[in-house]
Image (cartoon, rainbow, N blue to C red; front, side):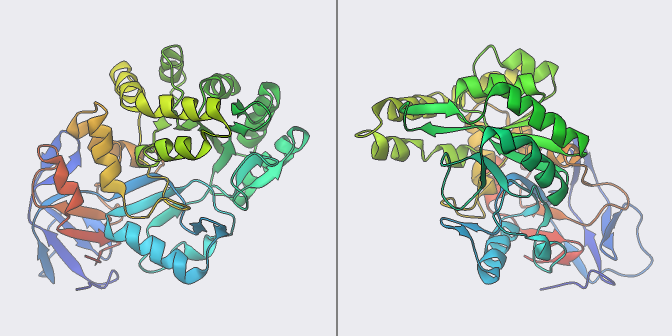
Length: 365
């Protein structure tokens, strides 16, 4: 079934979660916007269930495949998979094609783009990133800041084949200059960080977010809290590390052992970070080898890592939307909500079997 976002009225008859601990009754979608005031007209549809903001996938690559950019039909199919899983807002984390054509398209989550990844030459997956040498990084950061929607994505580390292990991609001083340049352009900067030392360099540079954060150590945690830098662990992606290690072991044994160790301590690291007050947001890293539509798995993985159910939910809902400057459940906000059969704070697995998905006042599931 569908409801015209321009004229349709939906009544949400179940409990409404306008925050992790804020429950109320009485919510409607009128002309694609939420309201707590009962409209005079009768609703076309009455939807029952626990209502919460549409999920945020804070690390997602709609438009990216294993070999680079995908065609438009594939990109739409990726977007549809995310939407059907309840992801209604995506923070793009780098795509090698201009995906602005997707923004505002029917049946597509709202997308906040970050332009292309910026990586060191020959130090990343082929065909995915703009590859530069250190002396070009600052200029490229400015370029990508202007190309995106307020975000720049750096590849902070990758395997250095000459060293046989993970190494930072760029000198720390150059990273500081690049982050400052992006900030000058009005953009925030996030960085792919697998290794331990890379996180130090990024925090020194004034980074705005850390992706993956597998190298998180006790020394990093107070700085993340003090600098208000969130992490996006992408645990469904980190689950691939054992396979990466097996494939690399014969040629790069140090790298393989390092990747396996990072995987083994992943839940412990995230739990310690949460306990210390580090902000954590949910992201799947969908695109390339990770299938789209896995936001529920990421939420459940964060719970396994030690986040209480409400906090794991918050990582993909209320706090994630506030961080990205997007509306949640409030008067006049876009009617972007999902409905669960049970209270997801008590039965977190209900996020994997949504009753309904509503985007812009249109029932898409």
